[in-house]
Structure formats: C-alpha cells, structure tokens
Length: 516
Image (cartoon, rainbow, N blue to C red; front, side):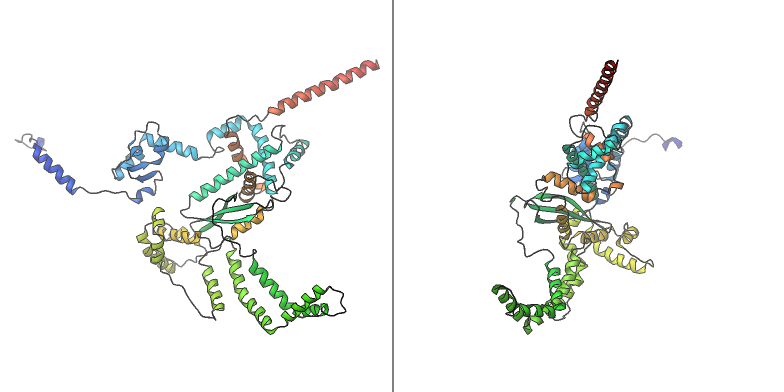
C-alpha cells in the first residue's frame, strides 16, 4: 500500500524479542481451540478411523508399501482440511483403487473378462459341469449321479470333456458354489448395523448332535434371515437347555382334544364294546378300555378337556405367530396379552415402556453403530408428527425409510434394531427339516463340510434356470497353487480314439487282403 502513497517509505517489520515470542506462544497454547474427532466425517469416508494414536486410513494402512503417510502412523490434527488433503493425495487414491479392485468379483474384473475371452471354450465346458453339480445339490441327489449325468451330456453331443467327471469333482464344484453364495451373504450382512444370531440343536440321520445357525438382520425396514452354517456338537462346553417336549406339542395337543370332542360318542361306544365279555380281546386290553371309559365319563375330565381347548387356542395362535420368519417381538405383544387375559380371568394389562429406557439400555450399542443417542427421542416425536401430517398412505416400513431416511436416520436405525431381534428359533427348526432331506439314513456318512455346502447351495443359490455359474467358475480357477488342466484327459482320449481308428483301418485292410 505504501507504494501508492507519495512521500511514504517502506515500513519496517516489528521485531519481537525472545520474551515477547515466548509470551505470545504461551497465550496461544492457553487459548488454543481443543479439537476432537467428529462422527460426521465418517459418513462419506468409510476408510476413516479414529484410534488412540489419532486418525488413520484403513485403505492406506493395508495397501501402502512405504508406510510413511501421516494417516498410517496416526494423525492428531483433527481438521477437515487435513482429511481433505489426504483424500486428494496420490498415495490415497492409489490405495483406494486397490481396495475397490479387490472388492470387484473375479468375473467382473478386466483380467477375468480377458481370461474368459481367451479360454471361451474351456469356460463353457466348466460352466456345464458347474450347472450339473448345482442341479445335484438343488434336487438332493448323491454325488455319484454326477458321473452318469456327464455321460448323458456326452451322448447328447454336449462337450463336457473327459476331465473332472467324478464324484470328487462334484464335491469340489458344489463347495465353490457354496463359497460364492456365502460371500454374497457376507456382503449383505455387512451393510446392516445390527445382527441377531439364531441357533438350535437337533440330531441328524446318523444320530449326531447338530447345531444350525441363522443370522437375522434388518436394513431400512426390510427383514432378512440367512443361513450361515451347520456345525456338529461334540461336547464343546456349551450350556444347552434340556428338551421340554416334542416340536409343535401345542398344535398336536389342541388337535387331539378337538378330535376327542368331535368323536366323543363314538369313542365311548367303542370303549364300551371292548369291555363286554363277548368281545374277543385280551384281559389287559379290556382293563385299559374300562379305565379309559371311566375316565372319559367323569364330569371333571370333560370340563378340563373344554378348558384346555379354550386355553390352547390362544397358545396355538402365539405358537403359529412365533414360527413365522417375519415375526416381530412387537407384533406378539397383543397375542401374549390375550393369552394372559384368558389365564387371569379376562383382566386387562398393558405394558408402557418409554423410549428413554430403551435408549438407555442400548446406549453402548447405539454409539458403536454411529447413532446420536441424544437425538433419538426428538426424532421419534418429529417422525410421528411428519407421518401424521403427510397425506400419503404408508403401506410398508420401506416407504417410511425412503421418504424420511435422511431426516430421521437415528430413530429409523433404532426401529431396524427392534426388527432385527428374533422372538423365536423357528427358522432353525425349518432348517433341520431341510437338513434331513440330503442327509438320510443311506447318506449318513456325509461329511460335515459337504453337508454345509449342500445346505448353503440349496438355501441361497438360485433355481436351475436362473443360476449363473460364472462367478463360481472364476473362484474355482483363481484358488489353489496348481493350475487347472481342463483338457488333461481330453488329449489322452483323442489319442485313444486315433489308435482305435487306426486299428479299425488295419483290420479292414487285412480282410481285403484275405479276400484277394
């Protein structure tokens, strides 16, 4: 500025003494703003982590070779500008590209597409074999059927080659199909903030104790339950509850009582005939018939039968509701209240738990999931008001998440938690019913790994018409130290065919010579 003024010389810079500098820095340190890590920074940056040593980048920590970056060692400069500078750096962009390339399936990568073009014939051959193995698992057929199914394809002039046409190859192919499907399940589970593990135990055809595990999760109001594996129980020190009775005993008991009331006259008449001396029955059977007849004709027993029918009708409704895989704890509240109403003489009773108590109980879990606990109650009030003022008709929880997902994310995540909690293990019971289909008394020696692969393929893989074996074939080809020799036996087979043709021509030649 002094250049544009006449008669003004350049001002001299003020030099501070050592005491003045020390005093200035002491005041700066005293009045310096204390910065901390903000959770908002992680919303669009999944790689950002806050540790005891400061902020770190998960991508750079895994893929950076020199490991000299500040976000690898730990950055304590809690500023958004520092994060943006690291986000735009060349080393971070390179590590980010490596991470995304690793997440892409082998079939979708550029290298995978190139290999498919180069080995298109071999790929089609392996795809047919994988489809055959997939069909075996879907229809619960033994592995030995894979051999004759490949022979049938050869008769139909379908090129399946001579290699990998055995029982061991069928097990391997189903194993890689199951690996590919369980990878998809893992990616779906990773998008959910809350999980609920469902497990139950039972015995299979080989009288071995098995534990079946499912995982239930909810994402934006959509409930999903996926099978994750079955494991044999070999006294691992787990405390398992004792069995109370058979499965569905409420429904069976209610049905038996209903049959007694409908056929009461005929049952009494039949038991009365068995007690007559003219009937040719054993003494033991006649005594039992007399005891049952006397029991059924007692007034208190008849009253008790009708009392049980009234009580079990409510229990049956609760039992059927709990067996539903979309069952919610909140939906069973009214059913339980009805059951208590019958048992306690039609007295009403209601539960009224405040959201604040729920928030306090799960506060640690909410904070780990990245929720703002102080905003949950306020968002709940605002969400109810917004839904009441909205003229649109909400038919599902998904519509609420689509409209209000960005405004009231915290309370909607709390709803996802309540939907994630499973009130029963009915899903595991249905899983045991499916397990007994492939593992029968004839196939009782089926290994644990093969049983897992068959169940995963049957429960997660698509139907035969919708199944695409590309990803499973690439996964099979990419794993293992040895290269896959798809045409190993095909070459020897072609040589055998040439020899057979040569022998046939030699025989024809000798016959012609003899004829001459």
